[in-house]
Length: 385
Ligand code: NDP
Image (tube, rainbow, N blue to C red):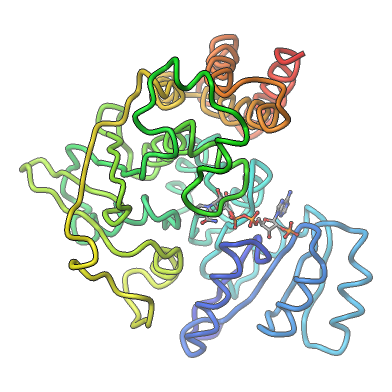
């Protein structure tokens, strides 16, 4: 095995995956790129393979195998196809850390495979931890695997905890810019249209993520993810609105001391730290200047109006398959809203109805999560009908 850190990137053609590849390319003496994967985007996978020269590529869509293998036939690169290959390639002895940057519940199986193969995880695929946090964290513990968070909020908490792992957390604060409807009352929220929800998004986001930010569901999922990453109770997690998006997370320790992590929003930083921990590597990323941001504001997140946030805290309490059902149902309802089949406030109401209708399985195994996901999608689709 080489002295360099062997990295596998699952979901290399996505937003996180491409940024991770830039980081790996910037430190060639430290990283050894072992594996990159894509779902269907064969052209980009080929382009990235030719540029970054991994040891192995996987294209999940088996129909594209011929195209990828022909394009790379002259390179010293192994090419595999199919869903099972994703789980097999992470077992290579050359891999130290697997960056899970696949989007959606489909990332769970390969995350579990990587943990069982005793690879450390740089976790971007939030769905695996939100849906199946109990199983993922248990397996990580059993296999002596560390999970390094990639999302900026969780990386912030993790960075505050560095050097403090033996000290007990009193609570953490997750920050949010507040979304486009911050300050709205319940009745005002009823009139929110698809166009308004998408147009008023502060950043360029994919439509699903834009709606999840507007309903606060995204922050709710982050709270669930934080519960599992940092072994917290729901009462130890508070969401605060911080419009400037400079403070990414705060930890309050038992002695009352608070540590915050701050900086300009740039996903490259948390991705890099998840791969280089405990070291910090010099970068030329833009630096924060206090004079550009002379005022910071913090306000309470409105759990009464943004019911999805409340619901997320309630599924933390319920445990078992409850969060798995919430994330699946929300997926169905957000797409229904985007297709103008239900209203903005219906998303939270229907989410709650699905969670309440679910018979929670405590201590679930992998198949229980798969079945809960399918059940929730089916139940949610029928509710819309
Ligand atoms: P993208 O949609 O940009 O990329 C997703 C990647 O996953 C692509 O490589 C895609 O391949 C692959 N993929 C999609 N479906 C499957 C599947 N069924 N099987 C295997 N591979 C699949 O997502 P992001 O990079 O934005 O996000 C990745 C994860 O990170 C998500 O869970 C997200 O919530 C989380 N995250 C993202 C942040 C961000 O700033 N983007 C911040 C924090 C967390 P192909 O290109 O072929 O479709």
